[in-house]
Image (tube, rainbow, N blue to C red; front, side):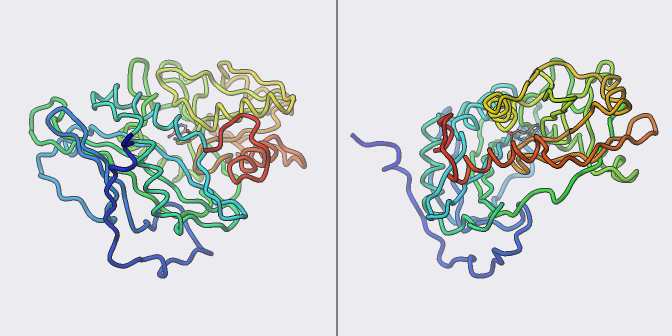
Length: 352
Ligand code: PMP
């Protein structure tokens, strides 16, 4: 039987850029590998994906991506273990979420086989680009955007699905100080916050810059209605530890259903850590910071895995978090990365 994998054409780059890359000093997401996967949607169907040399794309100025922001993306990583074997972490979850985002943005669904087999084909071609240094990985960026033309505010009739890769070092270095946002919102009820839509991130840049001007590296997003409950940490889900209980906000219309978030909840439970998925008020956080029961806060996402928070600002006042010898953040990060890099048994069946 002919599978899709046999149909994925591979056009190899004439020369490789790999020798120009300093793999010992990689930043995050700023150098790109030699190839990308491309798949076009036209006349109501997706063409077979193909692997082609990484290259610029030509678009008409009326392409709807430019005007109406019909664009969605994913973020995932390929890891190389000590023996040079390559692993992905829960890739089918990224595929599902991409299609959830697609539905919300009126973008056609990408067949799971195109995503998974296209991804496998690309990663096989790019395996030399997956760094082996500790903490490094090949960051993978699948995205779909409206390439079809027209100044009419309606969904495009043509789209491009692309997967590009960037060998990357770790995302954040060190702890971050965050500002609890009281004015701006990342997402609203009935909106697109649960989708990985490009515009969600554009909307974060300005408030994040204002916070940076005040000396904070990230914003803690609160609910759009009351600004009383914390929801996300920049482009990560947010976790809080009060005494020995680890908490995170429930997913909703306004919160991205993070793959790291749900994996961390499972690992924490497996470690015997008490977890709660519930609304966390800023009032509760401030009180816990004041009485010393607030032990940790961290962001969780594919890029950084776990990004510890050193303190938060709220209402013009700064609250510091303690330095812990044995933090949940470091334990959970260790267990996550041990699974991702094939250093430990994968009892959850997440490695691919
Ligand atoms: N929230 C937002 C807004 C994000 O952009 C991301 C990154 N995809 C996350 C949370 C974390 O999701 P994941 O763990 O799947 O990377």
